[in-house]
Image 1 (cartoon, helix red, strand yellow):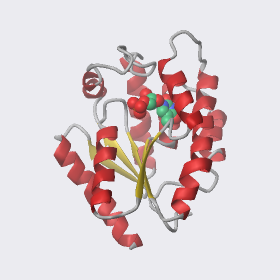
Image 2 (cartoon, rainbow, N blue to C red):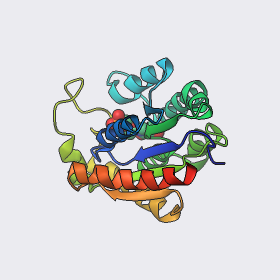
Image 3 (spheres, rainbow, N blue to C red):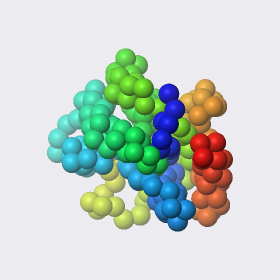
Image 4 (cartoon, rainbow, N blue to C red):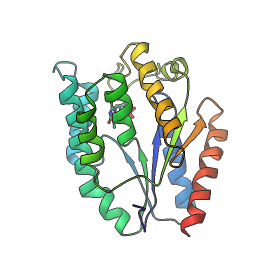
Length: 215
Ligand code: TMP
């Protein structure tokens, strides 16, 4: 199903791929053009989602197993779709979403090896007929991504994911590579190792082309 009114744009990639910077820049460009848009980040964007975000990323004193982790991301997503994404798309808002279902496939599916049926709950059941119009995947080598993440952190330490071994991040990246090969129609790979302005221009070219088809 196309999202008849607003466009649903998803940015994906491993930690340190530069998605969040590019999502902000894309939103700023849409604002400059006077296009109604909303910048979202998963997990988050609702009061429940923000609680889940701090729980799954920063709780060091609470054990979270892989099944529970997958279900927490699913819960945050379900709430975000119901509370924010669906209503916004229906009123013609273009959504720039920093992470969506491919993150669960990459991190929980490929990274944590959780069973496929469970990944499907978080990626298919929860989203129903909602599919992104485009997924822009910022691809960087794991070493590049992790090196970028070695700056100061919100809580003074790396989060639960950044703290994982590089073998975990390699499985996640391989997941993105697999998805990129399987989904040519929807997926656009952008080299995230290029200078930030160049990445921005490449992202914008893709979005502009897609926008020209709906306008
Ligand atoms: P970020 O704020 O840097 O994007 O961090 C979100 C973290 O959560 C990131 O390491 C990826 C992880 N994540 C999952 O493991 N599964 C998911 O479904 C989502 C949305 C994020």
